[in-house]
Length: 430
Image (cartoon, rainbow, N blue to C red; front, side, top):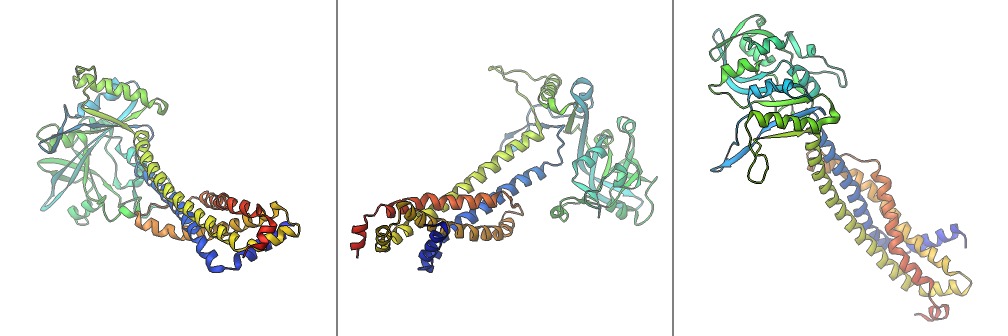
C-alpha cells in the first residue's frame, strides 16, 4: 500500500468524527502554546536581567559596605567605605586602573532670591566617561545607536578636571531643569551659586537628558540636581565623613578574580580586619562584578524557565494520553475494518502506518494550532510579566517537533495493537 493511500485512509479515519478529533488536539494545542510562551518568558527574563545590569561594565568591580541588622534596623557592619579608601586604591592595587567614587545628599541651592531643595551628587573626574559607558541616560531625542561623547551631555560649559576634583575645587554643574528653575532663563555659566553655606562657580550646564529605557522616563528626575567634585561635596554636605560608593575598573578583564583578591587585601589592611577563631576574615565590605550579578540572576531565571517548561511538558503528556485514548477507542470501533484489510492482504506494517499516521496528523494539527496560539499569547504574557517576553525563533520548530514526537510516542501502542489482530476474530467482532 502506497504512502499516499495510507495518508488518505488515515485522513478519512480522522474526519469520520471531527468533533472527537478536535477535542483530542486540544491537549496538544495547550502544551505547544505553553512551550512557546514559556520559552518567550524565559528569554524575556534573561534579556531583562542583562538590561538591568547593562550599566555595569565588564571591567568594573563594585565595592559595597556590608550591613548588619540591629534592633530590626540596617546598620553599617565594621568600618564604612571612605573617600580615602578609594583615593589610594589605584596606586596600591596593581590590577586596578582607576576608581570612580560618588556620594549623594540633599542640599539647599541658592542664587539671588531663588532657593531650591535638590539632590547634590559628589563625583570623581572620570564620572562623565562612566555615565556614557553605562548607557542609562542620553540627551533627549538622541538617535538610536548614534555614538555619544562627553560633550553631547552638556548644553554649556564642561565637566570638572581631575586636578579640580583632587583640589576640592569650588565648582559645580547644574542639571538642565535645575538651571531653568534657579536662573529663570538667564545664562548660569560663570555665575556663583550657594550650596548650603558653600559657594561654587557654575562651570557647566547639562543638556536635557532622558533615560534610555522609555519605561523609566516618568519615574526618574535626571534633569534635576547639581554635580560637584566629591571632596567638595563631602566637606559641604556632611559633618562626618560619609560612606562612599566605590567602583574599581580592572586593568585586565580576564583577571577580574585576581583583581578582587588584591582589592580585598588592600581594604583588609586599611580597615584592620582580623581573622576569627575559625581563620575566616570578617570583611566589612563586599566585591561584586557584572558576572557575579548576572550569574545569580540568570540562574534564578533559568530555574523559573525550567519550572514553566515542566508544566508545559505535563500538558503535552496529558495531550498525548488523550491521543492514545482516542486511538484505542478508534481501533476498537474499527475492528471489523482492520480484519477486512488484513484478510484481503494488508500487511501488519500497513496497519501500523495507518494508525500511526492518524496519531501524527492529530498531533501535527495540534502543534500548528498551538504555535499560532502560543505566538498570539506572547503579547499577553509580556503584559502580565512587565514586558518581559521575547519570542525565541528556535522555539517554534522545537515545539512542533515535540508535538510530533508526542503523537508518535503515544500513538505507537494503539497502532501495534491494531496490527496484531487475528483477521478471523476481527471479522467476527460486533
